[in-house]
Length: 264
Image (cartoon, rainbow, N blue to C red; front, top):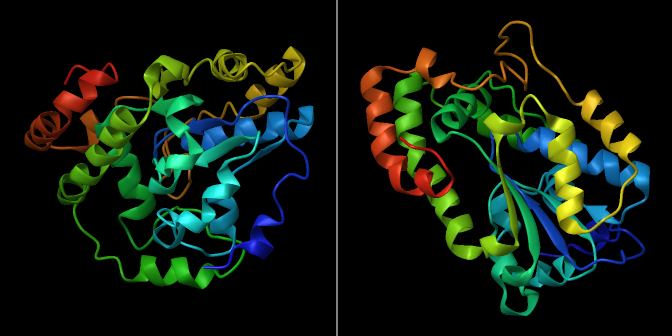
């Protein structure tokens, strides 16, 4: 696939730092994290790019680019790369040395993440954002969704989420990583944001960090399943799922969850 026109929108200069990466997973606070990073970089003049979001805005699905080696050079500049909701195989291309790069990773209790995913992706009336270009492609995928009970949906989707968590665990060098959990940063986004840029060795005025954190500290007063930020508070799976479903999810995620600090 020819990405030339789209990737011409990458920053026209590099930073005075090595390539660094901000990772998360769908429905794990990823939109909050990436929005804050993008806003700070914009205000502070830090060369950065979210290639996943750039491609999404043109209606290019993950499956079309995530394993495309021709895209690898775009990830080999001195930029802050963000926008990742999983570890795309292209980043493991030998020449990129991704395993030797600093990264930040935001995770979430996988049971809560799956519940949140159900309300965004698991229904025809999903709350997922539409791309600016070619929104019809996403609309078509949503229209083809078979509405299912939430317990059925989360059990079907659990193995895919487990594989994404395992890919991060196995593909990255966590001695170079800043690992944070959604439950720990939800009520203190300013500290989290400052930690990210500190970990990358990128100096940012504290007033910019504080301003961006305040702007993104969205805490709904009540649940609204038509909104991208539907509820936000941790522990939602205990209200939405049957006990037997939770027990099965605990079995699925017990090993990989322990790596990320979740005792299931």
